[in-house]
Length: 72
Image (cartoon, rainbow, N blue to C red; front, side, top):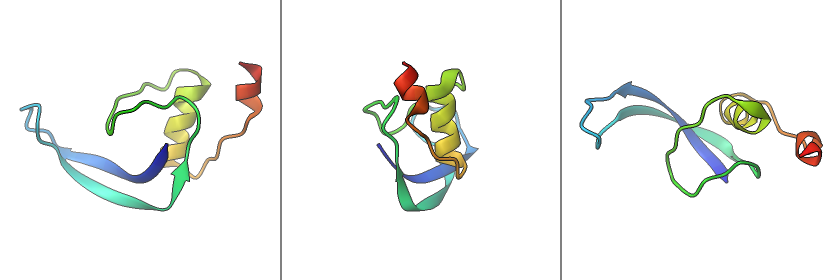
């Protein structure tokens, strides 16, 4: 999965269709190989190394290693 941009939701009118967001490009894009899902937007909770690692990787300059994957 390539992370090409991250956003902050500015407004949610609650209609299930529209979000007003502030997008920040990620240059260069970041490639993530664990815990992926085939949808453009999805929700995850910070539970366990895969989800916590993905959140850290997307929003912070923290890169993943294979150490945790090798323990699985």
